[in-house]
Length: 98
Image (cartoon, rainbow, N blue to C red):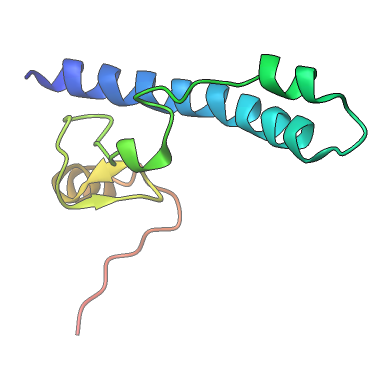
């Protein structure tokens, strides 16, 4: 799988998760409300979908598509982090030596 495909796939999974997370929240409110009729609770059942879970998402580098050794804060792999950090493109990053 090419790097663009990996990046696009993860973007779709995150979008679906965000979309269905709101629906799950609404479903829970309807299910837990004792004053609503039971027919409404049955009619508003939301099916679980395949990519509707946060555990289906994996950190993928936005530049290289690499799925290992990622910095979640910057959403990039260690190699891209080093490359952009050396050139001064990342704010607040200092070179450390001891």
